Image 1 (cartoon, rainbow, N blue to C red):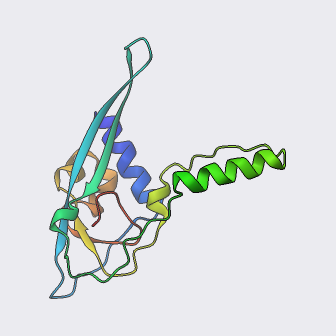
Image 2 (cartoon, rainbow, N blue to C red; image 1 turned 180 degrees about the horizontal axis):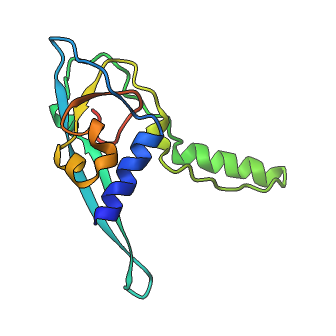
Length: 143
């Protein structure tokens, strides 16, 4: 599990999700939590352990005016797109963006606080742990 935690933290830091900045007096740091998942192969053998660090969105300021809309295609739009591609005899391909949700920039000042134990377990990321850090990009769990 430690490798899964370290990998998740390194991805968040390397993608520029956080910035170490001082909080203003009225601002509050939102705590984070972890979700752990065991991935199994088709023969039910262990494939990998996955960890995701998420923001406690239930504790986030509900007065935030930031738009929470997320662009997704409806099933009807998908059917129309595929029918049009068939009519034109065009090949359709699928793409997957790893961490696509984490690419969206946060437009307001949102601070989070990760547990200090992460800094003790992983000294290379100690600067980000146990202190309020500003979110530059979105994280899972944000309200």
